[in-house]
Image (tube, rainbow, N blue to C red; front, side, top):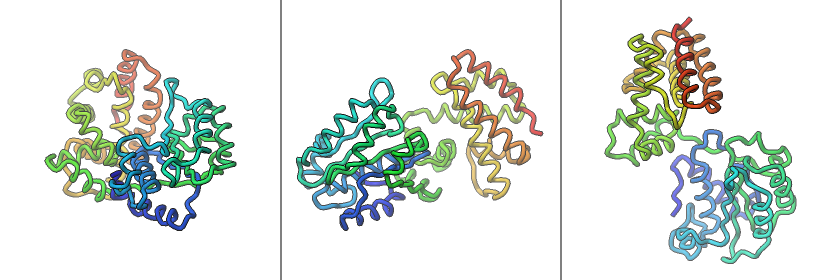
Length: 325
């Protein structure tokens, strides 16, 4: 029903065994700094907890699983930020009231806060009451890409769970299974562009923006080769919706080039690999480190710029980063 990602199965099975032994912790902090797969993980775990057969990911046939499939399971509550982009105290108060009600399906209740680090201070203080006095048979999952933003008192009352990440072999195999008709070289390119994150790669395919990303990568390569000046390159790279994207792509390429200088990769081709090869072949390790650091800073600042300033900032960045030293 909620089939887990293959690389998450061992971790989920361990938790299922704890559930069967009745020693599953009542609160977990799901640490997902890459924002890659936490929602799918928790959905699969929630389905396991609520399934009448306790089948991993749910059995699809029991009444509880059917209610989940219909999106109408009364014992599963997924709380997300409201319009203000915060989880507010009113939401947490409703959650506490809900948690103390008897499960309507007679098994357990599952509460998810996603992302938990979006709670405002009042909501956080209110949640402490639930963590200190947990309701029976109620399991709480706090999803966060930035656990450090949560109060220590919240973190200390949750069992921390660092999500398993796929190896490149696992990630590419999964991506090939979801995109069986895609060109292998294109799959490798998209996988690399998204930072070796298979779920993000699938989302990029779904967004139909693959060609745009590849064009941006090609423009960066031409800039490095000196075939295109910084002003013209900045125009090609300007992304109104995501001004940080050019810096993100160049950051990933610089990081990959550093790894390639230590562990050369054979038989890799594609548009993104051409960018990596250009950096690895002409920039020193120290220069790549400085480039990655500059990209990281520029990426952080880009969100505060308007579209015109973003393009000008990109021009300046390209001018100052052109020559490897």
